[in-house]
Image (tube, rainbow, N blue to C red; front, side):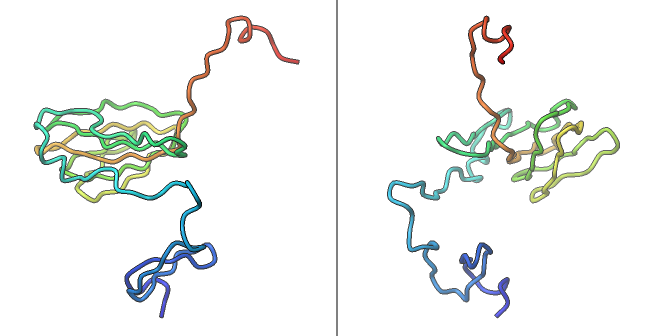
Length: 159
């Protein structure tokens, strides 16, 4: 059977193989003792319970030890995130509710529920929500935390 036919994915040599509906446990027999365990973090149905005027991040990935940042962001109807340039990070954006428009330096692109957009670092992008508003998931490499150094350390070059 081809790897892409069937129901459940199982790891085979570093690739995901889709099994024929049989229950497949984690590769290696289970999670490492005390290791991280996959879990559901947010239900998009929650978005329907929010006041229509709710704006901004309604969920953030805050798990310790994570390697990515992720947010669910809501823009109220016909409001916008002004065009800006992200110099450091590529971002994946998945529309999870509503619709809107992606504004770039070269064009505008319609977005609807299920649209997946890549926003490469260095690009200028903005968003305009449609009549129903728009909620989207963003995922990108984790930003390093700020490090506070004594003033003398930041001025004195290291050998």
